[in-house]
Length: 513
Image (cartoon, rainbow, N blue to C red; front, side, top):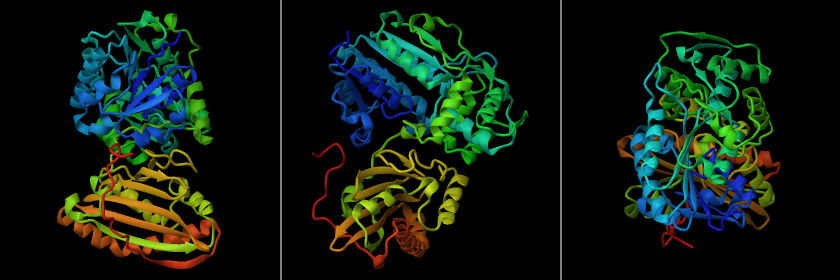
């Protein structure tokens, strides 16, 4: 019988959590999701489910963790701080784990279910990433609430970081000079099997207080994994040449240039590949029975999902979504700096719905309606200097949601049919927002582009004014290109636009309504 108490999911908008929550809801569980951004949680397709509730909180904030845990019977702890905390992820992971222990005990929970990492320090010491996962498990187990630690290696599924690295490198490199770890043995697991194990740990007491290795049926090298991908994707056979002089740092840099995965995330993942990730036992299969999916089948399913644009969650979904405070006020003194703006507006003889469809389709493979080579060059420069570049694309070709990555932007707000607000995530000497508005007017629809930038120091000012003429030219071209995409004539040509400064400042997210 399913308890009336909710199950708390921490990390609900991440890759695994974004798939676990709908599975639990479909199974009849009440689910409470904690996140730093309620709009990001609310944008998910399952957010309107009658058994779902959400609460704002941060694993680094003990008080918010205590509040989120109250009344819950169990928790899925699915957070790792590599994306949010960068180089300080190990310290952030320790703090989050300690807060989780205290919150679970105070709430009287009967279990903590943690998804950890599968690796042993045989020939190499554990990477910092895997050592942190192990340390989190130890901290959780030191508390009074029983913990189930599921240790997984590479998770294969459309949108996972492991699969994206595999997909892009194999597709783009017919010949690979690979580090020696390309021969390291690993035991990948399908995301579908991971989800069944996680849900099963909620439904049996036999797993309480235990650590289980979870993996698929195949133990193979990363070289063989790449060969299987090439076969399933219909690519010519790839040549993989192990060489001793390729370091994890260089491998991370190469992955950063070839895939959407940034170097700060790729490096700890790559370092972890030196350690064998092979299950030491298969006890979990006797407790939670399910068909175990082979690597080949998992890769084939993931490829089919990518080609059909059926990516339910993605590694890039994780991370903080907090807009700069100056977003909410036009008062430069209040926000702590000068807000520089560049805006253009144009009218088209079309309905607002038609225009919005074109707006929501921007970015990714569709491009930005003008100057695509310039956008690609800007992305390439960003990648060369260590930024994320343009390689993330977009999750879905026609539908956007709050929190989605969009090339080198992140979607902060969507008022569907009317307004789209993007925050820049490329490397900049300042903070930048890009807003698109669609407003029906008499006999036409007005489209407004507005770029806002708060510079950091002299470098930020020089950056803005050096690119300002280019911004004007690009905005005009994008507006005209958007009209062509809609297939409608321009009723009023692009012209400069200066927004009115509001008399009062709306409150930040989570403080209003």
